[in-house]
Image (tube, rainbow, N blue to C red; front, side, top):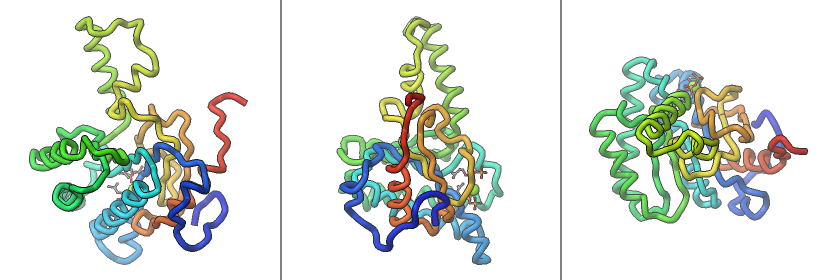
Length: 251
Ligand code: IPE
Ligand code: IPE
Ligand code: MG
């Protein structure tokens, strides 16, 4: 059940895009896997396994209903502090997904991109990430940004360093620095800012996700753990978004 908005009618409506004004870019903080497992007396990694299934379902659904950009937060720069076996289980799930995406989803229309610092991952995972990006680059469908070893402060620091470097080397003049230039030094260069960010699991925080890009993003907090999140919940979040009055500082 959502904390905000009306409760949803039963049954997924595949034509939601005809019913409401759709966001072009949706971000999802895929949170609550650990609590889902704990509630069932299972190890946290069982929650991540379930969460990975939800990720596949929701990604497909977003693509089907015509979302143009979907950014999912899969692993933060802070998540390395978790116990070794949990991090290991997550790396195993990433590997399975990346292999599956290469072999089974090759006729798919989704463009896969990774945002975050790839160099933190094993060479094998980095290769799989690069292969997924290269093999999907010419597709025409939804752009899926998978945020892995992503932290927004890290992203901003990286952008500042690159801008400083380009000024120093004469590629850029200080007078050219404005907010659209800064946007183009982010991992999401060339993409619209997220219109909507959904956080399941009921937490009211951003946890280092898209700080620069979310200046005027609408937030929807859902009181559902990510493994329990359904296409109906996605519809509900989209309906809540469509009822918001976005003013961007105007009247
Ligand atoms: C999100 O679920 C997955 C990752 C952060 C990798 P959590 O593992 O954070 O689940 P909770 O918040 O502990 O329930
Ligand atoms: C944010 O969730 C990161 C991902 C969902 C990948 P966390 O579970 O790491 O965030 P906190 O610790 O609750 O802020
Ligand atoms: Mg969490």
